[in-house]
View 1 (cartoon, rainbow, N blue to C red):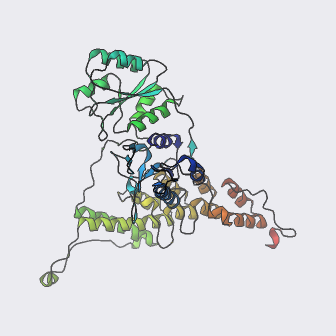
View 2 (view 1 turned 180 degrees about the vertical axis):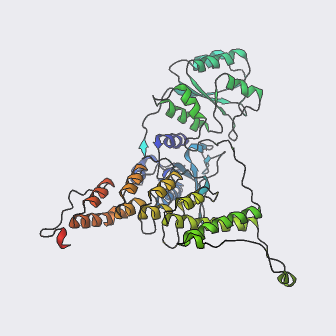
View 3 (view 1 turned 135 degrees about the horizontal axis):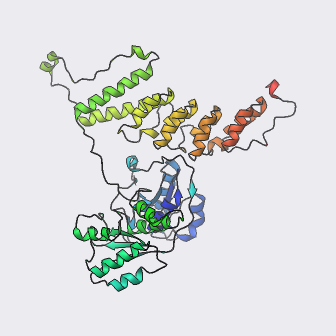
Length: 477
């Protein structure tokens, strides 16, 4: 199942919805297909004592209530990223582990989502499925005493890609004949990816023995699992437009969150003074967007100063960096909705460039809408584009069950509708089944609003059969 979830993560390109993979009995495949979930269990559902029910219901709840736009694997009350898991037991109920990446969701009494680690789709492209995997890939596990003749025979055509499982952090036997064999294969176009035989950790060039592999043309695979490295290699080699050099370059890039990116950024400093300065900036933006006359915007100053007489009566009030960060996050969540409603791109980018978690998809508790709903409702094309580029979910529904595409089409914002469709948005659920879209189309037909009909048609609604009743025209509606 680790191979299945890893392969699906690469084959499903520009994914905007949840795909959950788990282990389930094969004779329940029809049930899983109806729910659009590949699922399963260690003990078949036919047994009185089984883990199939918990796994199936848990996967179904996550897929139905949350939008996690990546291929995942649900098992034993835990949702893992699909290309980060390996199976470690054939008889334990806790059969899978994700050694180098934390779980996306933990299901207990509460369902706890790790939103900061979830993938956010930032490309303005519609979902598509790549349906091919190169069969000319294989895995070779190094061991002490392996001969160059064995490796040479393994690397003969039609093999185009090999996952080389090395010792520790990327070490290999340092015999010249072995290195020459690997170098020869790399020179003729075979893509060799080095990963660690250890379940936890990644390959590096910290040791001289690891650097010799890189000098021979072997590509480091970071902390990818064997399943992920093999399926990624098969996926990339199945694309005829990619040269071996381009495949080697893409191997080291995180395409679906399958490997940990090298950290090139300094961690955020949680000093109280710095957080207070950040809060001052957020409040200034809030006040500026809340008033129609920017010249009347007052200066906001946040200070810990306490009246001197109060200090004699009681200890001064303390404020931790965590308190300041929490306050800052709450202000950003309010500000991003305000900026989207005001069509203020500057304020929106101020929020998106902050380090405040997944505010791009935060729901306003008053309206029940996300920033993308607000921007689409107002036809703010630039704000919609910025939100999509920051990872806003086009399939996210508000408290009424509507998507951003529905609001943009209802308000006849043609450019916004076009951009959302380009990003993979589609109408469904209550938008269609509740009759809202059909009612809007009928009104457009009765009023003779050809522009509205064109927009609804581009959004995927059939407008050909929406004819007004006999005797009714646009003049008497």
